[in-house]
Image (cartoon, rainbow, N blue to C red):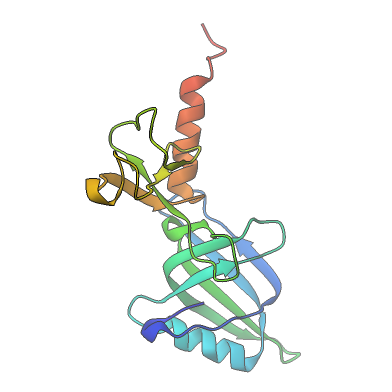
Length: 174
């Protein structure tokens, strides 16, 4: 997790409970048991004006996630047994799929305002998005690509995939 001033820290929450919102207006939440030191560090990282970002979040039953920013601590609860339960929250629209590798970070790709040509070598995704490569005549660095960027695997990406599938699947109704 990274916060203001580019500080980073790795955390472990025991007994994690992840709740993902269904729409971009919602809020995702993650809670789990932490040590006092980890809870204090989490609070310090998230205390900045823009909150913290998550480079790679792994929880049982989900693909690795990343969050672009605005992660904050919304609750610290101490049980009667002395355990400390911490709850983090962030706007669902900032959630995406984590990039491969230990460093993490959210995968970002863009949907071109005009469809890519047949000779376009850019990496393509199911939502219609792509990641430009510098040698692409249409989307490379020199062309200054005009793209609508979004987190890969996030709510926007999922909605675009659903729209594309719906457009290509014939309706069962006459």
